[in-house]
Length: 118
Image (cartoon, rainbow, N blue to C red; front, side):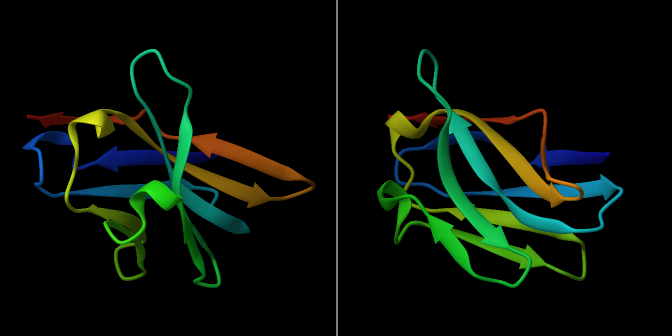
């Protein structure tokens, strides 16, 4: 099992920045991909950004140039730097991890709330 603990959410004004972190613990072998999804009230969960164990990253078009996903190997966590936040990006941000072990197992964090005010 893999446990994911997110931190860094909060309230920020439009145009501001936040940095989210996700720290995995437990059985961490074969973690292939980690990343972030978000879910606004009344909407489906959507992919924000991912990073693979080898380093390549991917992000949704709507965050390109504003959000950056990185790995902090020294602290064994991933970060999501979010700049130029917009009110429509308010929601719960979830960290996830895919583990390759006899198939792909996906683990989720409990989510951290981000509120962007006007």
